[in-house]
Image (cartoon, rainbow, N blue to C red):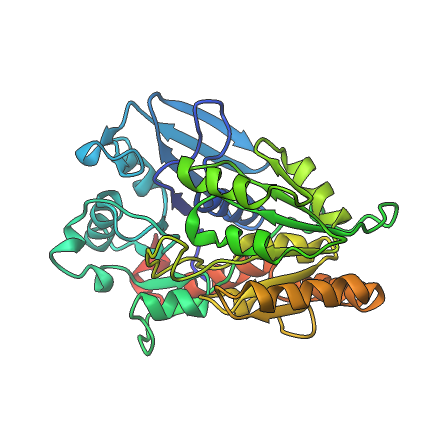
Length: 370
């Protein structure tokens, strides 16, 4: 392993105006860095409107600002103070490849003989990679699913690997004191490619549905509320982590019904890079239903931890919801199997171990002297 390994994680944006983490991609980089700090010196850097420093457990967090927004893009920022952080580290991990900060970081790391890695978490912004491939600028590409590796065009590329994602299995855990209810839960952003309209259409009698997430599209939100009329559907737009955990614990199942083609005819090539909410629900001992889309079949083992159904097919989803409703003992066994699967494959210590192994692979001997 690299001597005196010091790891710098770079996230394009981390904290919102209220101090909360923005979304799934930002949460991923934060949690990975936080858990990595338990094993090796780790720093997480991001950008914002003002300079700040803080520590969370053993993790050193630095927000550089006011940062320059590349072409005014909120999630494509850079600040010259980043150079100091790079010179502190001998391993640099960029979260999002196709951003100007990532390309410039990779270029500087190559010049200064530092190891540099990239993980694609969706999104991006203006970058020189729009004109020339920067794939070879990074020592390795660490993907969060096999699907992510495929859509990036990295299948067969020797300098890539799959590290997956994790959950805090102490926070997301079953509570034996909480009884399961005839409840279906969706957690996520209310965007049309999430397929929530199909879930509402599929909801059978005898089951409640809680839709947890903030609306991002007024038209889609209005359409969802019309579909939900006369059904036992509750929209919850402002939930804490504790609220979400409690919902998972009470639920009969968690559902992620994402689609490639939404109800308006729009195409989404990458609707899910992992399926984090499925993992969270499974960690709480809850059966999972997902569509046969993107990375999600890598998470849900059909017939064991839940069901994988065709996308854009409310009838197929309704059939599985009815089966779980009518077979509570089997549903409980699926939830237990899901918890075991998470403990085996989707914990943050496992992701950290995968990363550290990749960081140390094929190390340039010169790096050992840093």
